[in-house]
Length: 317
Image (cartoon, rainbow, N blue to C red; front, side):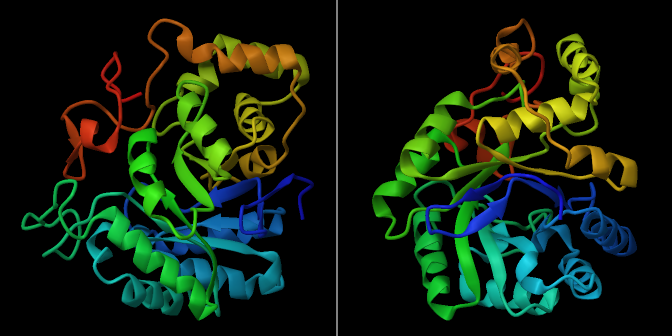
């Protein structure tokens, strides 16, 4: 196992600080995902992050079983799809069967918005209820809370929740989410969201911590200078920044050499942390590296409903 920190969740369970993400750019990628997960586990990864919507739970579970590593040493996350907000228990059971595991370590509500009357979000007949219409994310969370009594999931959490939607959810929680997985990196540090999550004991976990289909972070002179001085890659600088500020990360790579680099976190100085913390304040750098601003919504909800501020440069910050 790699020598990386673990974080203790608000329910007492522990989660590795660095994991491998299984979104392959399109749903599926069966053989690729299986091989990637096996390589990751061989190289010390113990956190695998997938989702019903990724279409590869079966291959993730197969890799876990074939790895030869005791199940209790591997942390598996999967997620409730938008089109199953009205059938949480059934969808959870389907994911459990697809994974072929006895339990799931962390189950996340993938998005606040629901989708009904459709097989998937891509269905042209998809109906996306606006905020306040059933099934609301509050109703969905109440059903997720019930999953803990089954003993088949250890922790439950949320994903893509902002300060706005989290503040709407929290007053109705019997169980506070253990994790909130969102896009996080030096261009999008989500400082207010992190403060709220810290105050409520919710661990922030970064998806796409290096961006998607962009080399901005890898080519940043700021990040490259720190990396060259420490003898590490730009990716290691960014992932170490995430972990050092108390956020977990899931980064996807199929390249074994990068896997080894990504899971090797380094200690950054206070000055380097301050530099990276302030990077998003530079002109044109406070932005998403995932969501391109070519519409005013994502998966049927407007950015203002999600609580996302729209930045400059054609990206959502």
